Amino acid sequence: MNDLRKAPLFASLDDVINDAVAFLQSDSLLLVTTADLASVLALGFLESALLDRGISYSRRILPPNSHIPPDEVDLIPKQSGINVLFVDPWNRVETSMENAFIIAPKPVEVEFRNSSTSRRGRVDAVLQCAVIASVLATNGSRTKRCRPYAGCGQWLMESLDTTIDPIHTIVRDFLRDEGTIQVLPLPEIPDASVDMMPLASPRRLKRLQKLWMEMDAPTRAQALSEFSLPLLSSEGLSTARLEELIWKRMRIPNESTDLATSLYRLTKAWPEQADAAVLHAGRLADEILKTGRLTSSTD
Image (cartoon, rainbow, N blue to C red; front, side, top):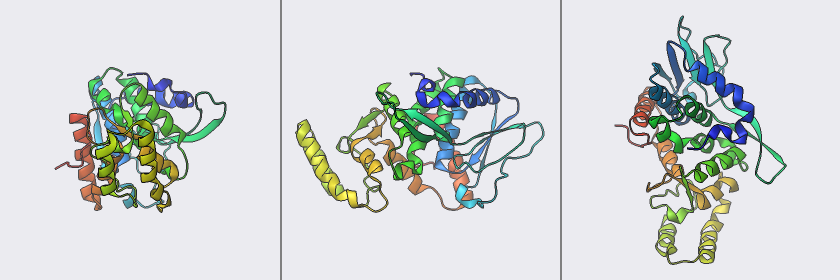
């Protein structure tokens, strides 16, 4: 693996990463987060690194963010002698406790290659945890298995629903260039969901997939453009996200499905009832530690 921390977007977060790595090596460590997909993904990176390093910890999963009143920000357990790291993808928790550390989205400015123009973005909690884990357990087997999911938190954020997310683009290309993921057009994903694109036709996609291997590059581009054209009027689907779903699906090598499809299916299958969601989140976290893979079934 390449050193993700050296990506330019982390330059301003150096102290945050160092402080988190130091905190994770505290005695009597408790990891806390909510029963949401992004939270569990972030937790998976941290727990993998802790296990790789042989560091003891305990885990506590709270009800989903949607079940917690908006004005309730005091979610960190107050326990004497316990060091609490709270993963907060929603940026809602506040604390002045010395024995607490919060990982929440952070604003950054980045520049693309061959460009002098700065772009603003937010580095989500999952991506931060991926970097923290890679520093804490650089060669850890569990940590390496989680690597393909480093950019999934950015995908789950709402920033792509309005415009291009520079953080997503940088991380996607970083993971592609090091060989952790592939970036492929929609027809090259055998088990791809089009449910994220309300006006997309599964039948048209299957027909396109059958003809895809016989097409040359210009014909493929034309066919995919024709497939995409009706989708531009999809309500609630930004052009930036549509472009990713059509042309730039992220896939773990040798997997039949792509990450966007996996995340979509996991989100749809997430229990609505708070207690069930907490149980589901715990099982998914255990599955990540056991196999290094996301699965929509945790029974």
